[in-house]
Amino acid sequence: MLRENLNEVEQRIEAACRRCGRSRSEVFLVAVSKTKPVEMLQEVYGEGVRDFGENKPQEIKEKYPQLPQDIKWHMIGHLQRNKIKYIIDKVCMIHSVDSLRLAEAIDEEAAKHGIVMPVLVEVNVAKEESKYGIMPEETEAFIRQLSTLQHICVQGLMTIAPFTENAEDNRVHFRNLKKLYVDIKAKNIDNVNMCNLSMGMTGDYEVAIEEGATMVRVGTGIFGERFYGSSQSR
Ligand SMILES: *Cc1c(COP(=O)(O)O)cnc(C)c1O
Image 1 (cartoon, rainbow, N blue to C red):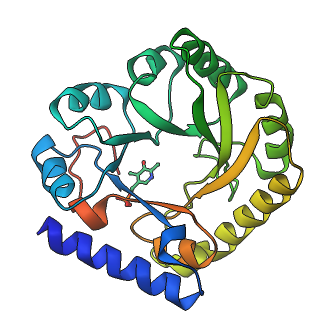
Image 2 (spheres, helix red, strand yellow; image 1 turned 90 degrees about the horizontal axis):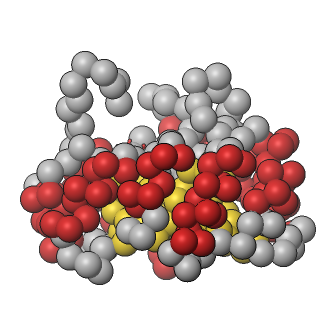
């Protein structure tokens, strides 16, 4: 089943690339494995996937020792400062930097490990009250603040677009984030390397690719529906 899901996602990514004249190699797939058991990750790993996305430090910490060492883990969820220590030496990128305090804390932990952590700035592109993320108009100033930190490197922007039945509704948000990304990239800020635009999930990754995503984060489309306890809705 997972192989078929993965094949379908792959075909849809290829078709979206073709529609907008992009090369498949410009789009990077992160398989979002949150809440899913290690056996399912192993199956997807067996199909050649090496990049997995998780939103809870504790889950990365638990899965990490049980899976092959060449997996690249992406931290994609809201991160609390006191949890950074669990993942700083395990993840290849943190997609969800949404405050200066968090960035400073990541910088501090990375310094302890003698590394530079690639990060993306999470932008609340649709200005939703319920969402984390920096407001679009504040993003450039925020990135300038982050650029002074020596042990993180800003590598682009990330967004979680509104939940919608119709992916086309999010096209405008993806387009706006792309524009913000291009504008900030053109400023050539020191210690900032704008090369990743992480946008698009199961419901809307094809539209996101058409609007310029370089990373799509697909969970349900690969692993199937997630079942939570009572505390979470999705
Ligand atoms: C869960 C999650 C995804 C994947 O969502 P699907 O709709 O299952 O593809 C992508 N990005 C983030 C930040 C998530 O938390």
